[in-house]
Length: 262
Image (cartoon, rainbow, N blue to C red; front, side, top):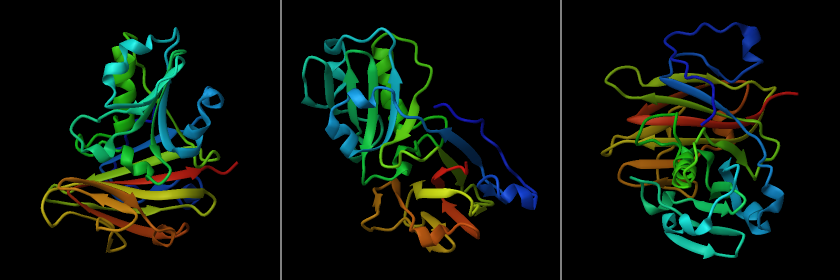
């Protein structure tokens, strides 16, 4: 995905002025990345119900269009099959069915993979790879583009729920027998639309703690299976203008959806 390079942080000394400019990882974090959001040019031409049901999405434009019949076999299910496009679901390799995104492919070359409005942005994290260079949605988009015989240069991202959001920040850490904790300070000058988490781990000791509260538990705002999970964090848990402690086991990612100040 298109993003800034990872920043591997050991000890970071932040000037007070910087705290008003960027979401800040004040102590150690294993990986960080930022993705800029942009509206897909074809969104006005897609079926209206996609714009109503879609949340976070990844998309790509194949310049010369596609032959839909050549891509039909990639789908698990096809819900709509008019002459102009295919709409259905596809599997993310190595993940359970709940991670299957909805996928739109237009014969004009537009490819869109998305999760529903009640899914957090953190569902896109490829926690099994422990790699911020890939996402579950990006894997699906790349599969379609490559099956069409076209060079893939990376997906773009957009959240249909929050058209004013401009960026997603990912902050990852893992437990490696040493430090598994970082501190984040969110500037009050930013608008935050969603705070969420993703986690990979084995056994009963896995956790994603925000200020000591474990988020990786069964609730209406989280999902967990035998090795992966994701969920949202209540706004009061990560209030801007304060320091917040994040602790993970085994591999966890904090995801922030926000708008930079104008």
